[in-house]
Image: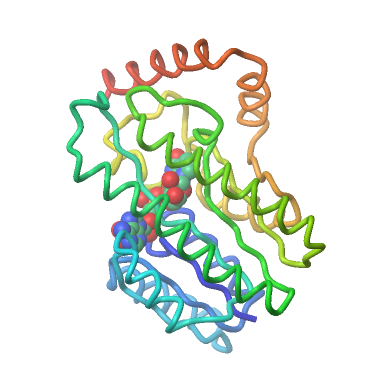
Amino acid sequence: MKVLITGASSGMGREMAKILADQYDQMVLVARDQNRLALLQQEIMTSHPAVNVTTVSLDLSNPEYCQQLHTMHPDVDLLINNAGFGDSGVFAERPLEKDLSMINTNVVALHVLTKLYLADMQARNSGHILNIGSIAGFMPGPLMATYYATKNYVVRLSEAIREELRRAKSKVKISVLCPGPVDTNFAKTADVKFNFHGVDSTKVARYAIQHLNQFYIVPTFTVRLARFAIGLLPTTWVARIVYNLQAKRQKTK
Ligand SMILES: NC(=O)c1ccc[n+]([C@@H]2O[C@H](COP(=O)([O-])OP(=O)(O)OC[C@H]3O[C@@H](n4cnc5c(N)ncnc54)[C@H](OP(=O)(O)O)[C@@H]3O)[C@@H](O)[C@H]2O)c1
């Protein structure tokens, strides 16, 4: 059984890789930082000598590299589209290049890999795709507009594919993980400070793997409650609340 995890060099991707070494005998770990990937590869091969771990260092924000990744490593049983990052600031004032890089990583790479691997899986009528969304995927995100919009894309794309698979009576599964704040490099990269304590990334990774049979995987009761409340409120109110929360985050950073 083969798993491919993008963004495996740190945070949730790294933690999921360590957990999945118990279940998969072939692992493909993808990110840009080859040193951190090699350290993880060493760690897994020491604790699980029977597991074949391959590392692939590439920048997923280039769609051509995503296609090359699929050509090099087709036919995976579990694809985890985890690579992604956030950034903050007033939309009109943010550098366009950074927005485009985020859209290419969080949206385009996930879209390309989902499409290519889903076709393999549908041909075999087996396999599972886990897309990493966020609680941000259920709302607008003023002061982090691009990031929230990318995660809305991830949630909506996954929802639509789930329905197509259901109609086709396919055995292929898709899930979307939607955590709230998690303690990883995310906040540093996004240049924000969480208003709430981030949850331990190992706990979130374990929860995700244990709940793969679900479509929406929403770790922690607080985030499930927040998601429920968001569904009850008008979008304009949600946008105002998120603006205030994000403004506080950016003042306290
Ligand atoms: N932490 C949170 O609060 C939180 C909450 C909800 C959802 N999420 C989502 O969870 C996912 C994982 O993030 P994390 O929290 O674990 O943060 P993280 O520790 O910063 O991990 C992000 C991973 O993505 C990889 N990555 C980023 N850009 C890439 C690129 N262009 N090409 C290849 N790999 C790239 C990074 O590797 P390299 O730098 O080595 O390339 C790293 O392995 C992201 O999609 C994030 O949006 C995070």
